[in-house]
Image 1 (cartoon, rainbow, N blue to C red):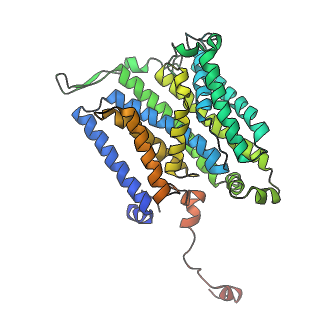
Image 2: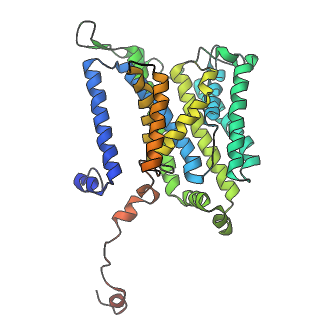
Image 3: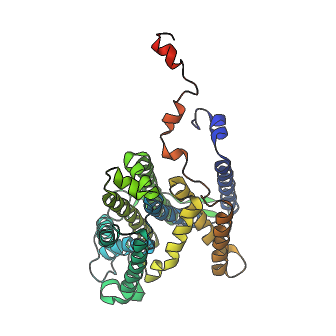
Length: 383
């Protein structure tokens, strides 16, 4: 069923959880629209939240391609995120102690190269062993990267962080100056008027960038999930001995999955650096890894759409609690803890577990409910 050709049939074909999520998304979007129109939410801050949600969606997709596809336990999400952020910052920022001044695209490539090397460094000695060895090694890796970033002043500026990071579009022919050339729009009058000026257009450009990143990664992972490669990974996750008995090089497949997920996490770090224009060792705290794991479990391990949903929910909890009239930090952990408890109790498979995305939709839609003719009639030449 297609949403455009048969909306009613498409809605009927959804599961109860999918219907609930769809209604929740519509209500959430309506609440955001109402806040924008009434001035309760500044447009630039709204776009910043969208960018942050996209960043967490990227991190969740990266972890899902490791844990959800292959069963690889990676507790160093913050490390690969930090490698991406610091990789591009040290290459392109004016305040970089080792390089700086290079185009952001070069910083992107440098960050992805560093993430690949780090993934191979941690994956080569551990992926032949049991999954818990990778978990232990990844915890150590995350702390080693964080301590190096915090203490190596001559490489990373230490606890002062890296400033002077340019926009991702700096040096591009048209996009660099596009926000300044667009007109300033004013809606309303007085102090509560909504003004759309250069910072808004710049934020809109950043949102377009992260949505492009998320869309590209989602399409690649969705196709990979349904491909023979993805089926091998799911077999490895379910029964590695079976995959090995079928002649599959499980070590090679797990390495490919681990590197792919690490690259996506580094991509999230690259976007964050050029969105925030400043990175510090605090961005590599273990709480980032914790949030991303919760997002993947919330959405449903192995589900790409679940990873997207989980990333958005985490940002909604993180930023939504700032409006509470109490200290927000403990409230975030309280809400996330409650989510984990309810999920483990009532829906351990996640809100949107992988179902239809495991197979091509056309295969389902084109399969007849009943055969046109029986085997006996076919052999006899009857129709």
